[in-house]
Image 1 (cartoon, rainbow, N blue to C red):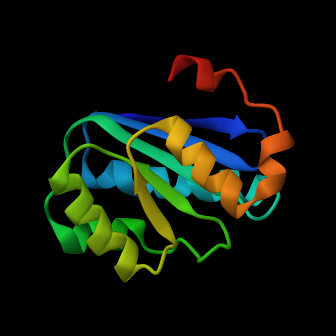
Image 2 (image 1 turned 60 degrees about the horizontal axis):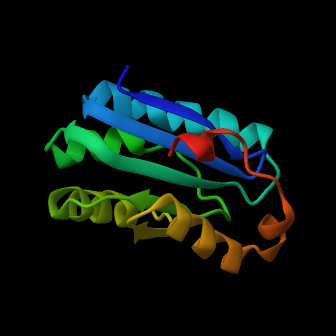
Length: 134
C-alpha cells in the first residue's frame, strides 16, 4: 500500500500521503479510506492529499476516474499538495470529472491556511501530531 491517511484536525481535516508507485487499485482503496473518514467526521470534512513523494502514478485516465468514482460530493474541499505539472494535469482532469471542489497548494501550511479561510472555526481546533511529521 503506497498511501496512509490520518486526521490532521480531528474529525474535520484528513491528511492522505501518497508515496512511491501508485497503482489504479490503490486509488480505489484511497477513495474508500477517505469515504470512511468522511462518514466518521463532522461536515464539512476536508482532505489534504500530499502527492509530493509519489514517484509514479497510473496514466490511464479512464481507470483513474472509475477508481475515484463513487465518491459523493461533499461540502468539504480537496487540497492537493504537488510540485509536479503532470500530477496537476491528471488531478485536474479527474477532480473536474467527478465534480470535486479542489485547490492545488505546495505546502501543508498553505493548505491549512486556505482551509481556515473557508472554515474559520478550524483555526481554534488543535492539530494532531501528524503535522509535526510533515
